[in-house]
Figure 1 (cartoon, rainbow, N blue to C red):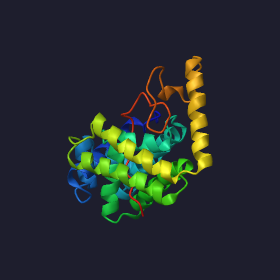
Figure 2: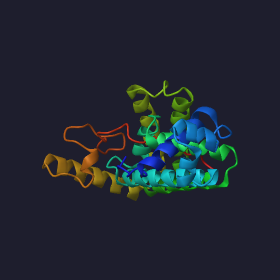
Figure 3: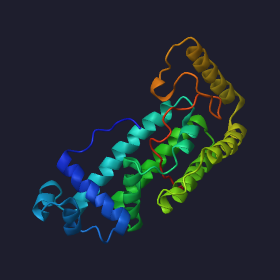
Figure 4: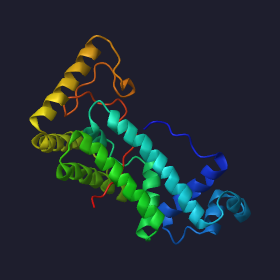
Length: 241
């Protein structure tokens, strides 16, 4: 994931405390007093930065929006394509984005309107980005739901059940067949041409436009494009509507 500047230190400390309580204890436990205690500041210190619990929720959702925007940017530019990037990074990794998603989901489950909007915006952005590669909406949603399954399984086990390399390869093979079946002949030709141009650039020692995600000598991905060097950046959770 592209580096996103963190909130100012004091606000970041309070948001981290809010996230921790939401993840570990749920929305009801995330009172202003509990957040202040977790952050080891006075309630007055908390209220200086966030004047209410609503302000805390808004701050967390705004932070999630920024993290998602950074991830979507990488997803759209990934040389292996948005689909493989999405599936590969759906292994829960306890990253900033992971924790922000889970925390906002806790709020959404408690019928918080702002959190629900943030989750819906995230879902729509991921779907739109996948559809740039796979225009068929049903197939694009199937890809996102597969990623959801990886994410849920790891998140619900505390990160203990992350997919192995062998399992991931098998899943990507299934996804490749599904996507290939949905792509038009023209779209397949465009992807193949992109893969060939990337291979020619690598052979000539010319960095690709997304060189931060590739390195010489890596094997191609399941969709005929180079694999990213960093596979642990940002898993996401998306539920189809």
